[in-house]
Image 1 (tube, rainbow, N blue to C red):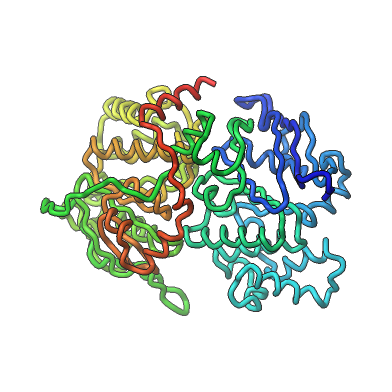
Image 2: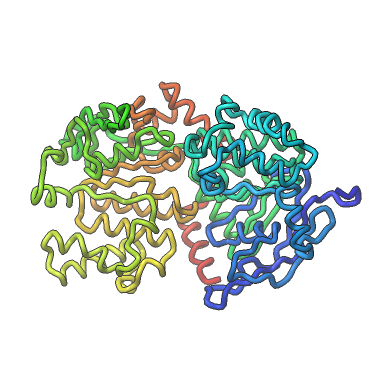
Length: 552
């Protein structure tokens, strides 16, 4: 790096155009950014804000359909955008590396991970002889704090956990000791403890390699833990940037204030009435699920017990593979349990068949995780929301009116009835999923990671909507999530799951204030951003700002 220039990376007046059919002209508009060696620079913003497009331009890897209109990107004083393809190939991986969001998509499933790392050495580290590559790879795996590096070297990606695969991807990115490391939402798909490990690793590697890290995220908790400086993007523009403390504690722009306000914190104001003796709407006893494989049996769910009354929310938390989704799916009978009982309004739900089961299902509905995959792209919203009503024998006109009423309640309205899912955002699609789940006025709603794919501001809106609708319909909610901060916002009670077992159960206030089980303590300690207290807006202020931003 030039001694006269303290910045290893500079983006100057970068503009990238969108196709003419898009709702705005620019994916990135007049962006300016400077990054120093040895710092973590976080870029935050909601989906579609331009974060990933801007950083992809650093490697001159702009998606088809987008057009580079203007700007310069300097690496160590050289404009990347003017380099030949051969010079770019030399730069990629060697001087500038990328960590992708989905590690399994970045790894070749048919090649052992050790060989995949060695390929990086082969392409960019010519000083390392062929017979030395394995040794260097093992050394790198050790630096990633992977257990039994020799075993991992010989493993295929599918034989490793998500967190281990992400470490492999990081190892590949760091194999050439790059000056710039671009991390595009590398922890989004990971559970809270694995996320904490990866964030800690990235911080440690910064000290070891003195590289500049450009970290893309929508999670301000992550920003609070690892950032030195922050840039906020909105509709292709960098609207605010500065030191972490400035952005997190004293945001200047209205959009930034709204994003910061949307960040959930691990505190709950809910005080459930634990003395209630009315009949539970859900009673689960010794619910178990065992999968029989060729050579062994896997216990995915082990004798789970809980009761839930009308108007209450049970948050079910735990790491990936802890049994959360299995519990949800066995309760609603998307998966048939191996043993145990589920009572819905004192009715033995597991014993029902045929017409009786169809009738009983109206009392328990599900909101799925993926707002894109859970809606049929070929069907209109009206068809999907009225479908359940019609199957239950509700007359067509009545079902149509009921669907309109529900869509208005979730903030969409009659105009959306004839539209298909493709014309809606992720948050709007999740609202449609909620309307569909509520169409039969169920007593119980099971929400399986139903806000995990949403931006923070949309997530907050959906959580508030669910809370408001819960009060109106007096329904019970089983809320599955790996995000403890979200669980704290919505839950009356918390069930903590580990390896198929509910290891701790209690009121949300008890669990977060005085956790008893070591695993619960581990989960809580791993949540990012705990030392940060975000400035809050009133509900009225947040609504006003959101409405003002719609007009721009």
